[in-house]
Length: 208
Image (cartoon, rainbow, N blue to C red; front, side, top):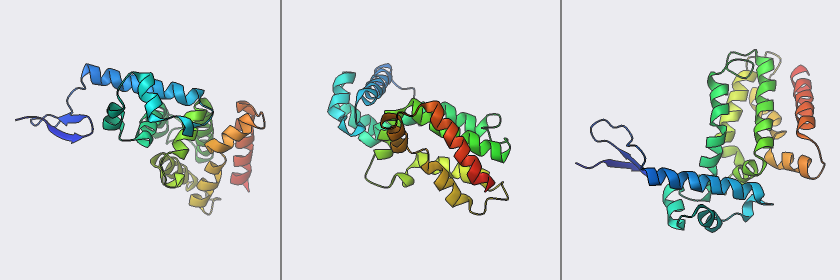
């Protein structure tokens, strides 16, 4: 009996249900695509200008390989972003304070916002592409829901914050990738200045 296909590029053993090991050539193609997409987004003036044709050509694979493996451009962007954010996600969910779940709530709120901003500063064009991906609202995206949920849960531990859900949205608005790009590209603000001003703004909100 053959393996049961359970998703794009994924097979599972019928005996154990465990995923079969990815073929060497498939793994190599995947890494080539992610590296090519990463480089193209970093060099582009606008993430919208990077096409699947360009990514396929830069990676040395057929365009059909991209669509079979990632579904569409949005799927590719999300996989690339998740690979970049995975270590940060681990630190937020299981690491020590102040960023980890056991950190004091006020300090953790500030640490979470700083982590979001640093990620977007380090991955400016990828963050822009992620927020622009798809035709729906960026607030419905999984990555935003995760950040908002984590921040909201932490804000609930602060008695002075009456509306943790709205406050989480308002604070995260100050870390949007398009705002980061504007401040860095149009107002020549350094990353350190952005981090300092965000921390001061968040502290005023929490202490109001």
